[in-house]
Length: 501
Image 1 (spheres, rainbow, N blue to C red):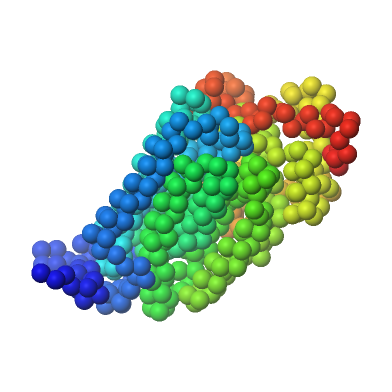
Image 2: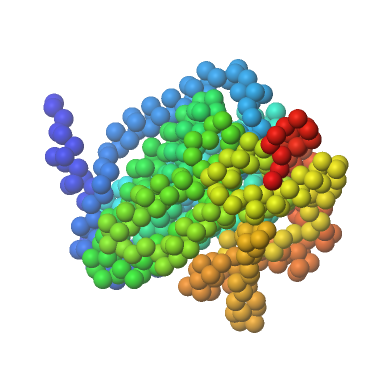
């Protein structure tokens, strides 16, 4: 019997709304879980997802993706990529797996909420595939680094990170719990699939896949490519939901969801992606700076998507763009200085050639961040590594859970943005972080940063070693300089003409 073309039956098959007879519609779809915001059912039935697929098509394509990724891994199992890779690249792998692998599992739970409580039948249909996508992403990103655990214990943090109180894991959990696990189905569609995935995750994975291939890590490149193609599909769930909300007079509510999600995603990706692109990626493999990447993909493309949907740019858009010049540089200096508190070894990215590249891409870098690195280099040259290590913890933002930092040197602009709420003083990295808190204080007020826990006596002994124990960082896992400080040798050689500025 001839099969019907998909366009002949798809719209009928995926229109699975029905009128309940044993319970009321409000009981079947409580507004607390759906987040329908009073939009009537008839309006939600106009939802039209741009990326359409059927279950047989989905299974066939996913099988091909898995076969491709696992085949590449098996074929390269005996390669010497691990032994021959630049230590900076291995650091990117460790930070990515630890921060992302179990975050995918959280995203699966978010997709499941849309699968059950999405008001639009098309949303529920696409979220079903998205739920299976995210489960696959968690599994494959736990399986691939597992083979490296016998060679390097830090790779075990792909599974371990989210089960600890390490500060980076706290920051990732705080963001993902906020955007994925504690929102309604409609809010998740907007904040996760539109703002987070369309705006940031999809671009992150595109860049990572290209960088991995350039670095010769074809196993990771095939893995990330197979994930990115999934992301590009289920990232389409949020756009049609936004169109319905705006058409039904809910633009202000939709705008706030987008603004909060972009602000939260920006901080985390600035820390992970910005430092990886401009410092950990070997210089010969850098195709563009993080600033160029953000201007092309976020400003150049995602900005158009926002405007085309009828939304405004977030009120802080220009301020965020200004942060492209310095925020990740500040985070890089922070993670290198506090390297013992990480599960990966931080690549300083401070050879003379690297510094020339940074000055070219970020004019004035040498007069700000370069001056601070000069002090570090001088101490290392003098054999005073102890002066480049922390004795205590930095002040941490109550929203991002990342240390508060900005531009050192002549342009010093590090500033706390405090807020007193119900007798407690909260500290924020910027007006943007403080604004997010003010939108829903009940959501955030009770959380304690790592420093709050330190001051509350939860970390014993009350010193850096006590903090490392609290963060579950065992010997063999504690971070250090990725290149064993070899980059300092270039500054010891009197023959080099490229001295530190």
